[in-house]
Image 1: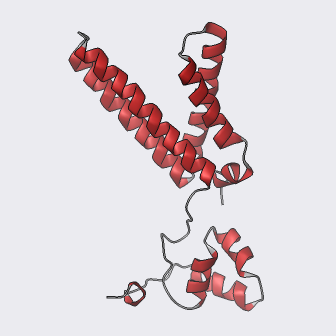
Image 2 (image 1 turned 135 degrees about the vertical axis):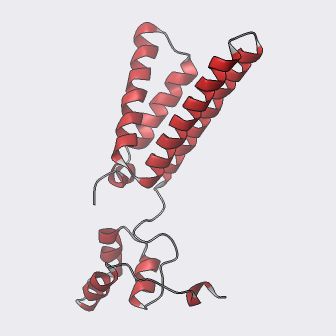
Length: 168
């Protein structure tokens, strides 16, 4: 079965997209307005289903890099806790901590990928706090501070990253 031949249940916005195109709006403007790729707008105009999830495009590169950094931080943090458990720590407590930390990092990463504002502000806030603790109290490792600075830089500085978290 060809991907284009599957049954397509149009999004209610499809009529608005076709009407905007009929009024002469450029495809690029329509794509930006509805947060779609230009290819998806062209497919909707042609009566075909979009190639990906309706209403979303993939995140900009800085957000993808930030999600990767969140995953890296989760791996390093959970790995340290596992090593601590092998070196005589309270294994039951540390396994619980690993589970909670992994779930929190996964939720933050998923929220950043989807463009949700809550995880964005949580990541910015925790990263700024980590930078302050690292510089003022020297309570954190230098690598933690570097990752925190990188997260703030990737999420707060580039315009495409900031635009990803704006409400429609």
